[in-house]
Length: 290
Image 1 (cartoon, helix red, strand yellow):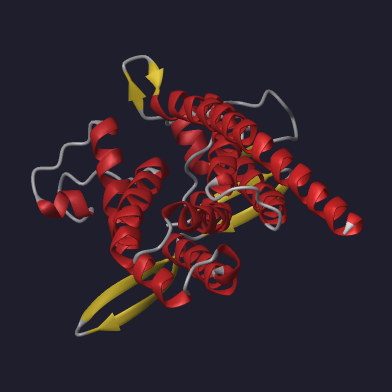
Image 2 (spheres, rainbow, N blue to C red):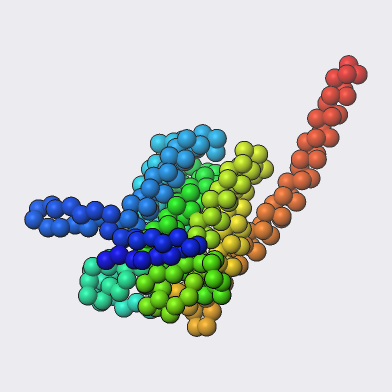
């Protein structure tokens, strides 16, 4: 299977299968989607290991948290998709994506984020790591993983949007034509990838002067929620709750709640910072008088 893709006037032929292996008499296909997701995950881990100390986290303990949170995140990503997509799973094989009723075996990023942070918080309690510090570091890792991982959607020709109405800007493939008809559609995977990568560099820079533990996590929620909310409006494959796009609603609520939390916490910190500044100045004056 291959997709004939045109994006921004460039013609490409894309094959979802990277290569095949013959093991124990069976043929196993290795997909680009899995390779891309794994690459994003690995780079996120490397970033976390290199910057753990800056976030007051022991690198070995961080890896212990990741080893538990990663499989839980994958499970929750699949569970979230099954619940809101209405996909019927009559067996464990269907849920995993290898059964007769497995559909497209989709996953949802929000399920992964929720699962990762909940299981990560429990592991932090167990390993005696400050949860807010771990969430700050994990947020930057998520931006790396999401920024890279979205290109897996491009390989599979999924997570695209409505028609652009443009003669140049957009993407078209034999899959989009079969599902939508002829015309260029919004490459939503690209929008989200760029949004996450830009967000990573901005929040990484700000993290060097973070004012409180948990600040980067709230910035991640605000940044990702704001961008994802608008991108979700364009998408045609959204998970629905009645007539409401679940991800769109959740994204904007997350953004507003996070911005409010940042403002409230900073206001509480400001009087303390002013008190410390005045106290320091008085101490210096007293020392000069002495």
